[in-house]
Image 1 (tube, one colour):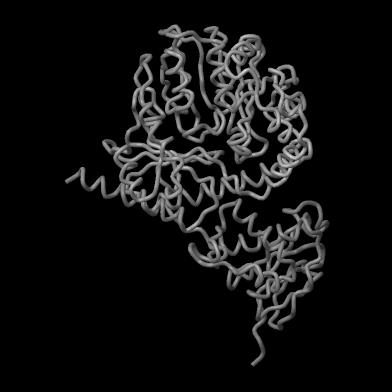
Image 2 (image 1 turned 60 degrees about the horizontal axis):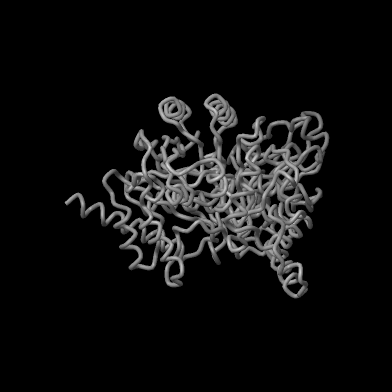
Length: 560
């Protein structure tokens, strides 16, 4: 019995057949057999096809010039070697695998082919396959499991977004120091999985050049490293930071910057440069507990402004507050917010600056997570729109490199002399050796590759953490959708006590950050923040599972 001829496939678009190297995406044509709806190959240049032999065992290809279409006859042939430049090989492979996932050939939870198997099957290097899998990870189509390979992510409904908070509509004296202290005291415990800390991943190999720079400086044994530094900070570092801030839209010179001992000192000197004891500062809510405890220590009051988990601080509520109260400054984190993770849209940043100009108040902008945005280019700062110097931009390398370096900076605008005075009467200067090492790290071009790696890792970890929350946490749990950094904000049903949850978890070797420390008035007792910076391990997944199980148990006890 003669073989039944296979059906013809649609004609290849001219735009694809003319030039395979026009772009990595337009040079790829996925071919489907109408009878089985599976991808059977990809066009890599005119008249040259790369076959997916795993799917096309009973098929071969032929070109019919008269009809300008692709046929799939019944005689098998072997795929020719893939001839394309290295930049397109992994993209081609990723698109082929991605289409098979989207078409259902691989289903949620399925294990994908191993790196070695794909390398042999498609005649490409192991590194090409690894790049293809990383591209699939970036697009949420594959997820790695330690020592198990790559899998199609489970298809789960994500938790709803947290509700917009309703903080007190009046200035309040800040409390919650006892809860912050409880968080700090648990840090030295080696037997506790620290899900509550604001700690980046410092185990990444991309930090090795920085460690080598620090080692060289320590071996040098020169006297300048033991002297007091200029109150402004090391010139070379300030020059590098000024170049770095161009990506955020800021045009600054080295003389516009003051190096500080971490972002915390940048915030503290900025607040003290503007405000006096008893003054009112408007803050986003929930808000970074470190900034609020600084306000508390300086005898100031906080006015919490409702904040949306996607668009940021409510400009309407802020305007009403500015009309009603003698607010001295606005302190917020508009990019990759801690703890909500949002990036404030540019039009709202401009509108906030307009409000500040109208009511003549300063803006203290915390941009410590801005470089960790998952999108490129990184988001602009409010400072980048500032034309009268009222924005004090604060940041550091504590979240992008390592917190132990204790190197931050502030661009204080019109408040430069006051900030210098506050710096002088506090630390006086910042340790020069870490500054020189970081300046060398930046100047040598190591910072951008490091950032790219961390952004990819943190975005991948976010997706995995959201999946774990969907799997292990009680029904009705809400969770943020961070657009950068490595913090997840979780809201449990109303009436839940996260303080009690944390005490239960500490006995099981797990720590979280309770939501109430992110409020001046003790709100968000039913919320918590978890860190997902570290590379996923079975231990971390087990810790998240314990958090969910303990939450379910506590909820069942309160409902009885």
